Image (cartoon, rainbow, N blue to C red):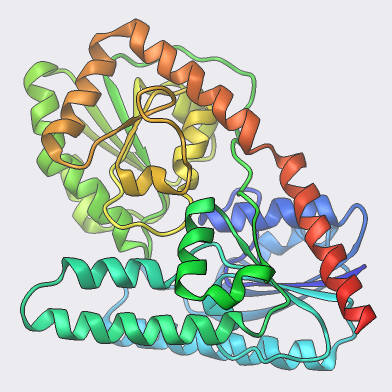
Amino acid sequence: MKILFISLFLPQKQAKHAGGRYVFELLNSLSKRHEIHLSTRLEDGEFPSLEELKPLCKSISTYTYKAVEKRTFFDKLRLVANYIGFSRYADRLIRQGDYDLVQVEWVETALLIGRGRTPMVLDAHDVITKPAERGMSQSRGPARLLARLRYVLTQAIERRIMRRFAAILTLSEYDHSYLLKMAPELGPMTKTVPIPAGLDISDRSFEVEKNSILFLASYKHRWVNVEAALWFYNKVFPLVSRKFPEATFIIAGYGPPRELTSLAEKDPQVTVTGFVDDIDRLYKTSSVFVAPILTGGGIIVKVLDALAAGRPVVTTSYGNEGVAAMPERDLLVADDPEAFARHVIRLLTDTELAERVASNGRNFVRKNYGLEAVIRRIEEVHKTVVGGSENR
């Protein structure tokens, strides 16, 4: 098949964005059996990264945007305008091209992509109405009215977007169920295809750094991850430090803002690494991985990778909702600071418990989130969509 992929973020083997890593693996696997074309947004300075994509793609078209260290209000408006511009650009590309299938990555990408003669699949990544609903439920006073308006508008836009596609892929059964409650008419075209886990995890082993606590995420333009790190540092880490004064908190990942880098400057127990090339080593040298996710989105890739690396994980209900691991067997779950701290302390104290949870978590990921199984399910969706289009 001749397939056009449209990606809001640059697909990369060493991606700054977890979804970009996932899309790279889709291209890498599907290019062995199909003719792949790619259209992607590209940040200034990312052009050298296209070299690793050229062997996988028959053609690559890019839509650039300016890189800035910290976005002002006007920069954020420009970013929204860039999203809209890219969506219009992609719509023209689809209409002018001759493809058997188009796969669009991320709901936001499809804002201005219209229904045409080419069958299209939407890889949703996140159900964007879900965090909008939670923002509304957590708002109080006059802010609640604005939050409700945002929720109603987001839901209307998302439903309108999804009706244009022949198939919609959600990354978890939770998102699948949420989407069908929101828009039951989408049921026949919605499939769950989980994101593959542990793509950067090898068979290597490393010595664990005692009482080290890791949180790995992408922070640039992802304030929810910044909030998660700050929540853990301010509300959970002090409770852990009372029991383990020598405990360390490692905040790793691309684009940490000043709010995070300043923590390492004033507190010797905190390390802020920035982007890390060898995340396999990073995961495996940590005693505990924490994912204090305060707002639900899609499946939390960082949790899956930590489990695949054989690390005991403590997360929130939001962090586990898309993963669907069993609490107390595959990982530990807590939603308030005191309970979260107790779980971290349990894992640092009880070696047998930590090893059992880590082993169960790794087995859970291998069974449910393998790359080959994911690619096979995506190709089955593609064949069904293209076959249905030919029969009309």
